[in-house]
Image 1 (cartoon, rainbow, N blue to C red):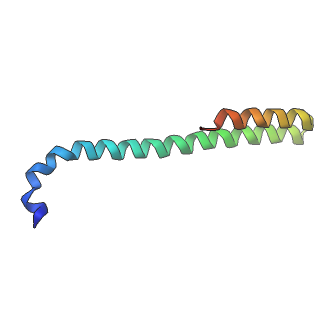
Image 2: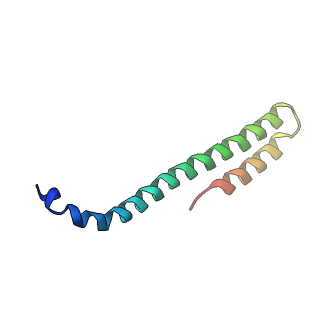
Image 3: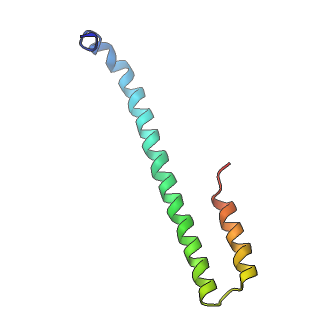
Length: 73
């Protein structure tokens, strides 16, 4: 009943609610995309190690660089 009475006023907060929902969706989509990019870089790095293109020392250094690149503080 209260919602029905305040229906005309709800128009005022709908844009704010929609903006907040869009930000949340964009955040999760961006987080997922960045996670996929990190996984791809790590897979490429592991492939180089498996093909003996790099040694374990180079792998470890490159892995730390990739992890630092995608770390969020």
